[in-house]
Amino acid sequence: MSETTLPASGTAVAATAARPRPGVVLATLLTCQLMIVLDITVMNVALPRIQADLGFTAASLSWVMSSYTLVFGGLLLLGGRAGDLFGRKRMFVGGVLLFTVASLAGGLAGSAEWLIVARIAQGLGAAAAGPSTLALLTTTITEARARLRALALFSGMSSAGFAVGLILGGLLTEWLSWRAVLFINVPFGLVVAALAARFVVEPPRQRARLDLPGAVTGTVGVAALVYGFIRAAEAGWSDTLTLVSLIAGLVLLGAFLAVEVRTAEPLLPLRLFADRNRAAAYANFFLGPMAGMSMFFFLTQYLQDVRGMNALGTGFAFLPMALLVFALSRAIPRLLPRFGPKPVAIAGTLSMVAGVSWLTQLGTGTAYLTGLLGPMVLMGLGMGLAFSPLNVIIMGSVPARDAGAAGGVLQTMQQTGATLGLAILVTIFGTATRTATGSPHDVLVTGMTAAFIGSVVIACLTFVVALTFRRDADRAA
Image (spheres, rainbow, N blue to C red):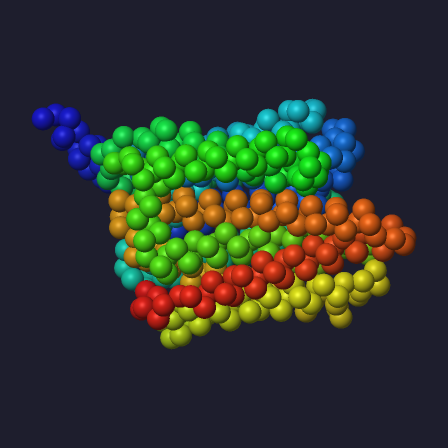
């Protein structure tokens, strides 16, 4: 008998101790999401300084980025389910603290290996906190209009974080040091953890068992697949380790699906994909970042290596796009009730197609104002419009018991899509540069335009998926 009353008693105590202030909770959760997303791109403009200080080779330098996204994307599903079972608030606070300590360790890194281990620990913390962030948002803010506004702000923070990361990375690297890019997480992480511990109310935990077979096969499968694509970008598709990793990833993910179908309490409830609109929204959360990440990665190199900008100038070059995404995050709560998610998502995906298509015309002499600002504006418009409706479709109708799992799947799709997409596009880039002729800048731009053509294909797929939304998706607004 005591076993059944303890959880209710614990929840009551937590609810009494915490002071539910939705505004403070929303700000806390959005700050955490911004930290997690920023860490994917904030390191980009600092990579040359990191390479010089810690002795990375040109090939191994990519692991500064991929070690974080590999662990983050591979463990998100486990983090989401663990939050449902062991307490979302507990997973959130613990994940934020681990992320904060790992950021401090990374900033103090004295060797390449030290930094990579710190980045892996950051990924672990992000995977623990990330799914609970979205789940706590949807369970804390229950009024319909307030939840719509909160989800739109969450999506805007996620989208803008990629661009803001480049700006912040340029500022910190140019004015202080690349180490400041990691140290900046420490004060924010401590404040987020403290506010969450005081103001976030722990939702009731689900009585269930952790799906360990599903956790092992799903997590290792995603990690192997991500590693295989990253390896392909470095060593090519004929590399033995690349092929083994990709095959192992596919086999393990097949085993994961078999486990999920049979288990009574799955890590990934397949019922989340039973709704056509929700399944399509998940698909676009996978495809959209695949197309969008190419802009940040390749244009950062283009602005510095071809156009001769410094880290600070490169960061500010993305400012118009960041401002546009932030502005749209405030407009989305008014647009969705008026037009519905489907028309907004279609407009956003079309804008993304136009933006990356424009970038296929990139040349060595392309000026920022005439050849880069326009694509950045279109991509900012597209990201701001295309992703916010997806949050509403996915989280607006999911049962409370699946909120953590739904948030984990959402972010898994987003992070895995970005990682796999970048690896595929870098592979296209490498293949094109091997056969290109001309000056080093000509060869570089040839590879970039080939990669942008691949981005166009992926962006077109996001538009096709947006067309499949049923009109009843509009009523979710």
